[in-house]
Image 1 (cartoon, rainbow, N blue to C red):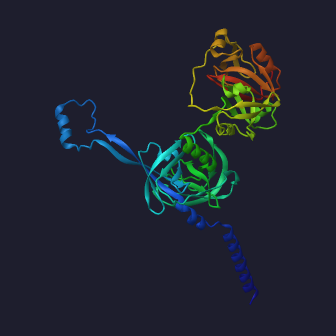
Image 2: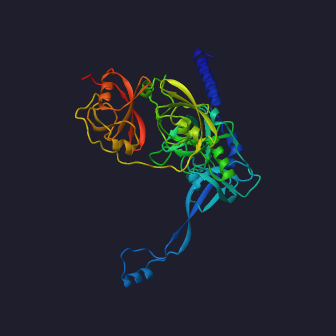
Length: 470
């Protein structure tokens, strides 16, 4: 054998070894699908729609025209008519017919049909649904059904392989795979679910289906996709199964879900706010206002507190707090660790129950005596009148009456400035002279925060740097 021939043989051997090693590293989903796909179901719903006997033609009073429509336009049959409304997925959680799916899959349905992998079909009834987490528990009259196993979402690692089984666009028992892209995602208007983000191909019809880990355990319920076209774009979100199981337990036992509340308005702590409050790093939930008479108020929590722990669990982001509070049963005691004026404090409170959401707002009141010159922030403020203090139930504050184009603070006309926070020190704002002196005494590169009231809401805004002293 020539040297060239030996070299070719060696190259082929090396390539074969590399391909074999690569094949070993790629996951094989066949066994997982064979064992657990029978527990995944297809869900179709129908809604009864009532139709009138004749088309409604506005302003048509001529009897000859009415007769024409009666003779030559087909008359729809009066009364209820079922119409297919949606398709979705679900999975069996117990052999006696309990099934988990998304609330939006069965919402408004008058008729729910569950189709098993063996082609049997059953009518289902809704045991309960929770719109806040998008979880629904339904049941079919059957026994001896295959049921899924549950995993621990906390053990999931970013980059881990996961598998979805469902019915995208009505194609039953479709299997797609990908990896965990991120954990604990917060989505707009979704305060109570720490979503699992994946790149598994999820499309309409996958909603309510299970997300499996490689051990064949359900770790989530596929719920949402991010899409600009209505189809898959590489961003899918699943509800962690521990959240879903807690919801289904309450639905099965009580028919509804109860959640805790403490009565605070919070905002994210960014780097500038952390510096302003003397905190070591950006973390926690900054309390911008406390509802009077609420559990937080009775427990001693104050506006400007930064909540770092709730019931022994760390609050790294402001989005963590609503989940932790909501998961706490109303009536139970909870310890809260807060950062207040440069020091840690531990408070205790009794958690209340979350009721229906309230929306409040009004036009900001107008000040009557604005000052003429803008301060170093590029804004003009005025002291509150006695009537304004009474109307807003404030003991102090300065009304923003003008915001110049070069303003260095994200404030608006009508905002009421309540306090300035710098290096962990809180100073209530009472007079224009006092406020302007405080600003004049700050270094041009100072980072500080302003507590303000905007309408009925409280918030903090940060300022990074001031102009030269004038």
